[in-house]
Image: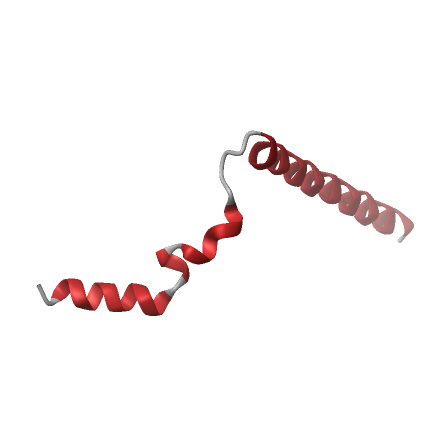
Length: 62
């Protein structure tokens, strides 16, 4: 029983470290290199289904 708990604890720590490394890498890429600014995602067509649907319907009428 204690080996199972210890094993799960270590798995959780490893997963947490993995997520930290992923987040730190993305922060370096997007922050320092100014590669992509994801904070303006609300302006994209795919995030606004109503506008996208209207554009598709209007494009079909031509």
